[in-house]
Image 1 (cartoon, rainbow, N blue to C red):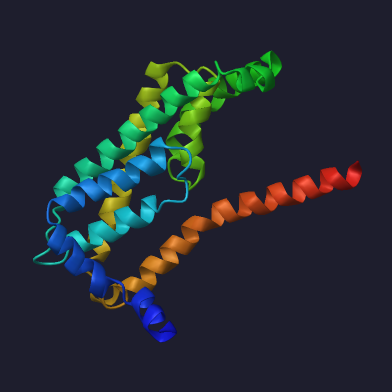
Image 2: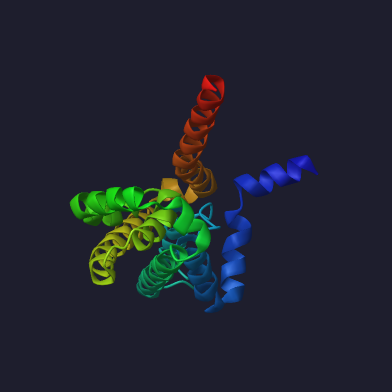
Length: 216
């Protein structure tokens, strides 16, 4: 049983490719939902955004694939853009809740506003490329009061770059024989690398809390 599970993990393309073929156009709906949830719902930062873009773009490069790279790019873009917008609006309304009114003091709010005046655009654009972080950037942008038009402008740029780079790399490598032969292993490596920022943040927060407890 364990051997079968390990085999399935390292050869999952043998299972997923036929699954996508069976789903047909519903594959796009599933892809949209996953990317939207990762970016639009703050409770799903662990979902595989980059990995999914790379994987599906690679599949689209295979002859006879049900996935079309042009349709995928549109799906990627709309899912991420709508997800970020929803997340931003959630942030705008969260700050009105009693909990946030209590903990988001005027001093903290002004600090956030000053930071976003200086680095807001860069944060929105480049934060999109950092797993886990990209889920919280729209939320924080809305919470500290970043202007919706300003957020929308930089967000479109960030999402567009993210989609173009991810899908282009995936589609290009999908035509390379070595990648096709070792696809599952490469996908797993990318997924693990995407988890590194989240793991580092968790370790830093743990060490910070432990240090604070020792100082008490």
